[in-house]
Length: 374
Ligand SMILES: Cc1ncc(COP(=O)(O)O)c(C=O)c1O
Image (cartoon, rainbow, N blue to C red):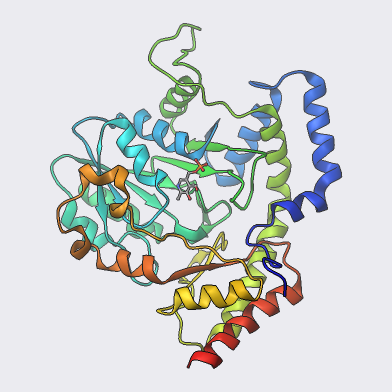
């Protein structure tokens, strides 16, 4: 096999498959001349709100902004603490820092790799106002437990569903839980914009209108600029493309789940940890992440055979310099599970454009690795 014959991302293949439809959408939008604040943006917001089961959707330029605006709309800022997993993309925690609040990092559960609520309980203080819950890799957490926890401690819930579009827990879709939710449409996500994109979802009008104001310079309903805002709009092209992709995504989800089921069956007897499953939770396999103490050797072996893999995430957030001033000394001993995850996780290609033979090749190559080393 040649190097990177099996690519980790499917964006180029997706474009080849849908080129005509996508170009027609771009042409239609551009011919109207309305590149921002158009009917396409309104239509997309209606569609995603209905898909997720929320009253309001406000599109923005990224999920990073969505999280920041969501926290700000909840009134979180200086003097507040917000609980967040220690094992996620940087934006889950940097959004908290941007509001002026303090991120309080919590170690993760060794099976789900999501925030460990027992450990979270130990970190609740008088100033804790909220928790940011990440549905890591596209697996929704146990919503009842998360909401019970928040209720017990009087915390607001911000759902970081960046990776979880289409995931469900007992029939409730990711993005439909808690006070406010955020989803990403960046090019690495299961439904991707031509560029960056994100959305804030909520059932509260007050939060939705705050976010609408933040995304355009703090403009209020009277047309005046009432508070400091930003420019974080979704383009009409992105909105129109995403509205169409929301229809296609059901097929993509089924394909990703079929690939995951194949990997699960083929790799079941190998000395590695397979992705978590939670009863009642529909995993969308945004990422298919296995764990091995020989992760780096396995990754190299796959690379040598032309299979591209990634690591999500190579460092816990407490190791990221941007958060240095929020970390207690001796952080490593306080977060053993996050550190262990960072050393062992490996993400396999799982996009819906993988051919059957490629999926088989990935699984066979992993088996060949363990035959060689065991
Ligand atoms: C868990 C999580 N939160 C937030 C983000 C930020 O999303 P965006 O890239 O749309 O700003 C990402 C994206 O990678 C993510 O994976």
